[in-house]
Length: 230
Length: 230
Picture: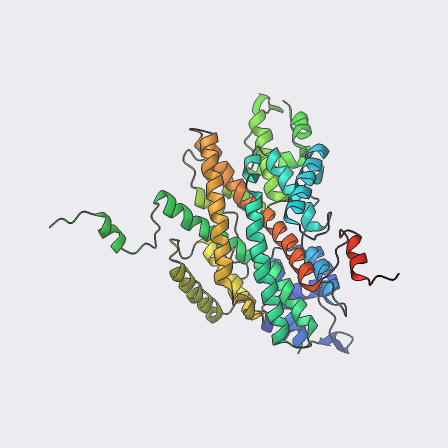
């Protein structure tokens, strides 16, 4: 197909497609003349992935380029691909070294308590340490009091993640790239899913705790609260 | 303090502070002459919050402005403040209406199954529906097979969130704004914490499941795998 049809099928405007081609987020099409190229189904699929990472995953272009580099290797490195979508370090210059050192020491203790087999210094490790230091700097260090319980929930989520990826491996026997593709989408786009679910669960928890009425409450709730009048 | 000292104390460069002042993210200082203003501790605190939301929370400037508007009201609306940091809808034009309708129907069923008291159509509701439709569009609808278990984990996280915010209310008796401030930071900056914990927990789960060696593994692991040679 030509670029106009690629645009139609993917819902991505032609100038944006050209930008992605220049930035190396989309492999070039097959040239049929010096000014015209033909694109295929893999281009549609790649464009959808890039748009989902940009729009839903809020991943910056440079990080997507890095992620795709890992994804396109014959034996993709899953942790590196997923890790490349995290961008810790932006906050670093504004955090006092002592605060960051303290956060790393606390995080090392958490990892030891849980007997987690993980790499200290990886992007998620850095991100957690920066969040911990930032929360203390904002005067909200008390919000870290139950980090072990958050880690319990993270363990549970990771178990589900792993089971879904293993199931995907059974569905797509011998297609290792489908497993990696699923793990990347499940993790990065899945972060937006979990973020949304957490907000809904918070809304529900506070509605139940404080008795706040939701606009969605069925009308019978109201009638139950009223004393019978006749 | 003058703007130069404000910059030093907050770690935010002077041009960036001026930009925040123009954008209304930082209230103006007290003018001591037409070209000079004096700033106080609340400005340092506000700047730290804005930087944490930008750097750690990856919240866009326009969303922060909206969030601060809610936060600065005498009786802040917590759900609106937290919800304003979500930006669903960017992806919408690229999702077929039928796919989005299906996702909303599935989400409504999930909410009914869990008896969640929440508003349909709120920003997190929209975000979840968009993620569900996007995952299907990417050919990874199988990753939604265990969404109820993700929702269980979200319920658990929300319980911890609520307990931490209630504890904060006890620590800061009569200071309602501290509770809202804590809830906003706990949720938005907390998303980055949970995202990081999920990645570490994934790394641990796959290391244990597939026996992948972490760089951190103690050397005795290796000797255990080898048969004794003498």
